[in-house]
Length: 288
Image 1 (tube, one colour):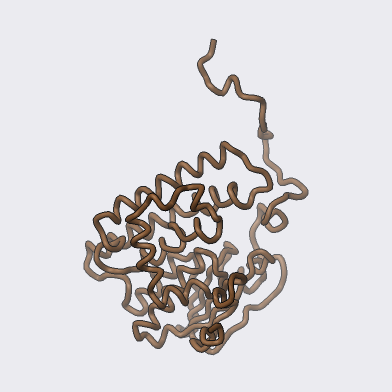
Image 2: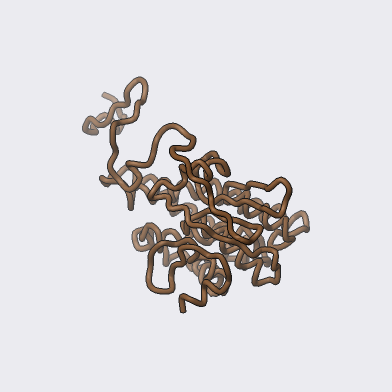
């Protein structure tokens, strides 16, 4: 008799020899996702008056970049003025020809720097953070050890967040049916990641030590930001038990630049909590 615990499970989905997409899918992104890449329609991207043109939406990945841009401006880097154009991923704006020309992967955010000749395109949120930090010489330490630690946590976030967003977030919040195995698997890993952060922050003010860096800006919208806002999973995961993480999260949330950056390119929320597009610092004044 086999001791394999799966032997007693009811029959489930059996994958075909070769996967093929169905004619239609349910769920929030069911009508958008396809197995091929490239533009689906012709649409040029708008260009504003600032050298930095950001094409994004206020998801956790989008917030990383707008938080950094607002922090750069708050630190006196006038050259970081930017236009933030909304790319509505729920409507499929990311598949327009202009956006695909900037990011062939059709994911927000994407940045075009018109201060260079020819212009420089930058895609992937982590790449944009590094590009801007190096361009302005801010929020990325120059000392080798601190710089390495910043990159450690930045790359940790880039590798870990898809598990939360694409895994727990999808199956817990967006999937048309609730699958216990999938939610349990992703909840387990998300809890482990929260514990990694909580343990580290018990003895560090910020992720890279005593300096606030792009690593903090990358992690903050995801851990535990996405669990409070996007997926409403903070109670499910008992986020309140991670006291050191919450200390760090609350301190960063209190920064005025973070408060501004987190609402840029958001499309909904309470009054004053979203700004669909940002083309000037005065755009925030209209919200008050």
